[in-house]
Length: 256
DNA sequence: ATGACTGAGTTACTCAGA
Image 1 (cartoon, protein in one colour):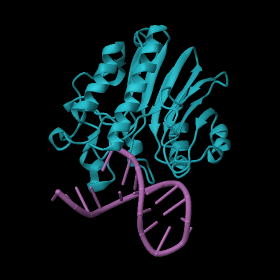
Image 2: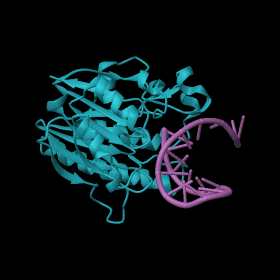
Image 3: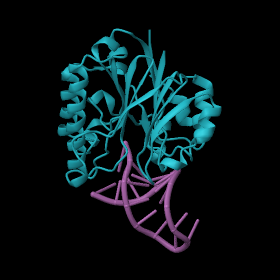
Image 4: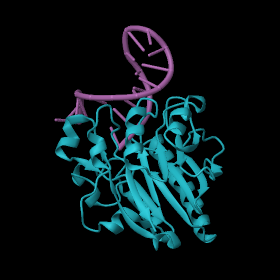
């Protein structure tokens, strides 16, 4: 069972890259973020032609999340997080497939910090923590998957000292991530590679990909029962080198 | 400290991203 996450940075603009990667790697389940497309502009036909069923939550211009699955027996459980009726941003989608609860998320960036965007990020994090605690309490086979916009430790940043004041790396942000981990979630990629530099994002600027000046911000957090099934994982780094590619690379894990 | 890229919406430029 191969599960992947990919911040596509515009699902229509990246469609050729997305289809090429799907054909190449054939994951069973895919979480997508940053669709940047309204609900009716999701490229469903192309996704279906590639052999996938899809559930998605779009939004004009920004955000947007989707879950793709080869198994048509996929059921939507929830879209959006509880705790803020005013929040209209499409950032959370929960589906049940292959006896797994797949929670696809796109956590707010939060820059500039401090400021209202950073406040929104921390509040969103708090709502996610409440949802995550509930999932653990119910002992569900759950995975929190997606673009968390957090580098958890110094090892996850090419130059940590340059990022200390950034919304993705500020102490409050890292503390919120570690609070989530302390609930009982397992950071799958870091567990597989305890001491290695692993990046999932490279800026478009300054040849960041060529210099490997990256960040690890796309994560798989596994609930206890799912953690025991973790076999392998990695980043499809070469995809970041393709033409018209996203600034993120696809990340994947395999479960037994 | 700043700006360099990129997509979307719109159609000359802004906004947002990380």
